[in-house]
Structure formats: C-alpha cells, structure tokens
Image (tube, rainbow, N blue to C red; front, side, top):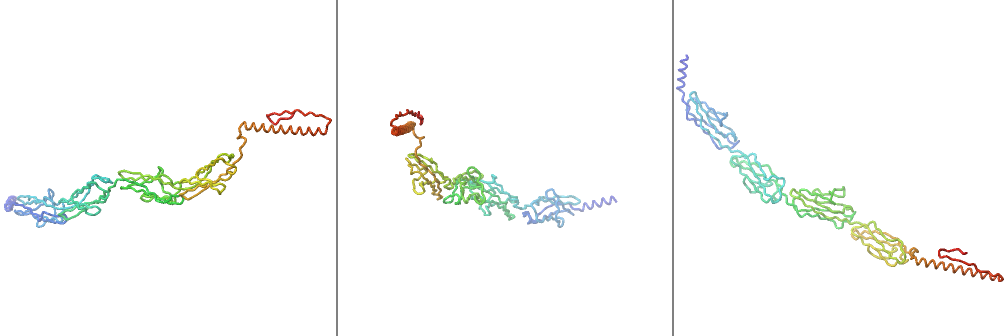
Length: 434
C-alpha cells in the first residue's frame, strides 16, 4: 500500500504543471481617496494555483473573484501598496512583481502659522503667515482677509510695513487639483496698532458756573487705543451717582451740575501695547462772590487817614464798589482810602462785590466812627502846659474870691482891721490852703 501511495503521488506530481509567469495588473493606478475603487488581477501559468495577497509585508484580505482577483472599494491613502500576489501549487510557488497605486488625497489639516507670534503688532512691523496641509499631490494655497480673497497665492503671505487697515481675520484656502477639494484653515486674527500721538482734552460748555452749568471733558488721540484712564489732581477720577459720569469707552467725562470742588487739573492717560501718552487740562469752575469782608479801623481820630480793604471768595476776581450811608458812591477797587478825615466821615461804608462771569453780587457793611483826639495822643509838654494853665486859673479864682470876701467884711466892721491869711499852692495837685 505504501508503495502504491508513493507511486500515485509521483504520478500526480508528474501531472502537475509548475507555477510560472506570475503577473499582477491593476485596473487603474491613479486613484482618488474615498472616490475610487481598484481591481488587482493576478495571472499565472501552471496547474491548480492558489493565491495569497500582500500589501507591503502584510497579508491582505478583500473581495476575491475567481481567486486571482483582489478588489479594493473606496481606497484610502493607506492603500498605496506595493501589492504582490503569491501563487503556489504542490510543485512550487512564485511571487508576482509589486504593483503600487498612486492615491490622491486631501487637503486635510490645513494649519496657519504666524511669525512672529503676538497678540498685537505695531504699525510698520513685518509679519509672515505660513500655510500647510496634508495633501497628495501638494496643495495650492490662496489667502483671504475677512473672507475676501487677496489675490495672493503660495504657502507664504508676507505682510511688510503693516498698517492698522490690514488688521482682521486671515485664512488660507488649500486646493488639491486632483481631488478637486478645497479646505479652509481656521481664521487667525492680526491686530495692528497705530502708535499713539497728539492727545488733547477739549472742554465743552460756555460759562462754567458752580451749581448752574454742565460740562464735558473729551480725550482725543491719534493712534490705536487699548486703555484710557482719567485722573484728577494726581488721583484716579471716580464717577459720582447722578453727577459725574464716564462714558463706556472712557472717552468723555460729563459733570452736571459742576461744583466748586470740580476745579482742578484733569489728566487723560492713553495706552496700548507699544506705549502711552498723557495730556492734562485745567478746569476752572466760576463761582461767587461769597464771604465778603471789610478790614480796617472802626474808630479813628479826626484828620487821620481812612483805609478800608474789601475781599471776597470768587472766581474770577471781583469788581468792588464802595458806597457811603447807602447812597453815595465813594470809590471802586479793593481798597477805599481817604486822607484827612472829618467828623462827617462817620457812618456806614458798604462794599459791593460783583462777579462779571457769574453775574452774582454780594455786599458787606462797615461802621466807622471819626472822633476827637484823645489826651493820650498829646505830647508831655502839651500836657504840662495844660496842667499849669488849669492851676493858674484855679489860683486866680481863689485870690479873686478872697479879695471879694474881705471887702465885704470891711464894710460891715469898719472899726476892725483884718489881715488876709497867707495861702500856698503846689504844682503837684490841687493843694490845700494853710
């Protein structure tokens, strides 16, 4: 039996034709990912061949037709091969030459890179935008700003000496001429800031009068603004409910009504990523007149100078008008001066303060008394002279009285002789008789 089997096997082997002339043919080799399908046909000479398929070194399974055909439906970029067909029978085996497929795909994963990367760019800067994608064959690129094509092609877009007008959202369109597909990158924002210059503060309002007027301070500047800040007299300016408001963009400060305390130095500081600038403006609030006062001596001696000074709290400074006893205008200006006063100058002096801007007025009264000179104002010699004169008058009066009394007594007593008493006077006082 074993001999018969061996002899039978030999006859079978002799009857089986060897594998030879193995060829592999693809229905097409230029394919588009997801759109194309391909059939690989393996041809061979020999008896009873069996087939085994390989993509690179990996065995491939697919739809087999008549055992010598491999069909790939909706190819992908990973189906490029090379593909090989291995045929075999009981006599021998043989591998076909490799067949590679060209599969067009993409563009996918379109990515834009900006150099140098920054949140903001100053005017005059140079910027390079680069675009790439996964694509076969290589994609072609077009550039757009805010959705409008710029007419610029290529993987790079160079922006030289950029200006704020070139700010916006940049995108690149990738196009594959084989797949006929377009893919858009994510937009990238480019913000170009103009350098800050020429800052000014303007004040609107004709007459700025406390309690009556409304005023607005507006900060204007050339260039691109990132932040704007208001200060007053060195400190941060804060809004006040129902009176001081700041616009949402910090451009305008509105005050209504203005008050005396709103007078001050207002400063606007404007900044962006590349610098800052400050500008100041003095706001003067007009008010008054208030607190009118008259300064001077209330009691003076006749013949002396009258000097009165009038003052008031007021912006701008006041005009002063002087009247006497409510009717007579006697002068203008902050001071009233009169030489050689007389008794008739005693009375009420009124100073009326007038503010030409606020059109307000206020007044104050001053009582002045002109009197006779006091003894305290005489010299020592004058005082001694007056004392001597008084003593002489007193002595003379005493002698006269004495003589008069003596004569009267003599008439009554003619027989009696009376001698007058001796009398002494002193300059130190009124003295007593001895």
